[in-house]
Image (cartoon, one colour):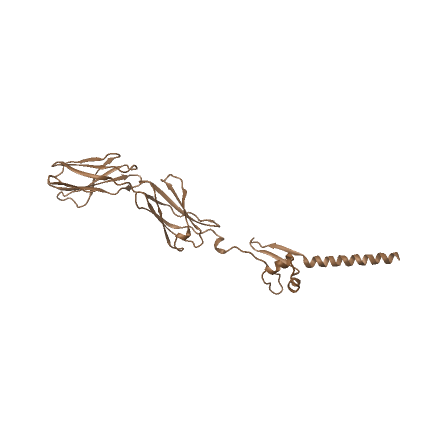
Length: 289
């Protein structure tokens, strides 16, 4: 009798283990990540039951409903991916140029080579030995379509100052390489109030107002009417900083002369506009700004 009781208990325990094993087998799940690190896969071994039975609120069935339709003989797969255009940083801009526009403004232009940038980072430095720093962010909303030229003014600058520029594109994936480097110097302030005065039949005196703080000096040019002299202004002298007068000697009586004065800097070839004046010896004096 005891042997029969033990045998019955053994059969019942074995049956329970079989039932538990089948349940675990049918409900187990595996999560894998592919080699690219981008695709997340959820495999549900009880998928067939989830699709045919009445829906419930279990995690496995809720996951199955959001999975992509499975091909015959395969498991359902749930995938996430990153849009192609933001996987890589944008291409670097090119053909950067910088032009002096006035005593307070330079104009920059460059080629936009990307269609996935979030904008552009403008950098500049003061002088050849300066250090680059970001000074402006340009939104793509103010730039033309890709592969077009972009024009950006750099304003409110001091006169007679030498600047170097470069530009980078950026997006969520990072920044592009820098463009080429471009250089421009703001113009010097124009000298004003030029006067020309004949003090003898052979001498004319000039004076003017200095408006620039960054100059190296002034260039004096003259347009003469001497016999055999080529038409046009030609340089006759230079004077140093803060010098605001000049005497032109050994002239020919009864001859018409015109003058212009402009500020200059030697290290960046920046010139002001011209202030001009004309005179005819012994006859009349006419001043022009």
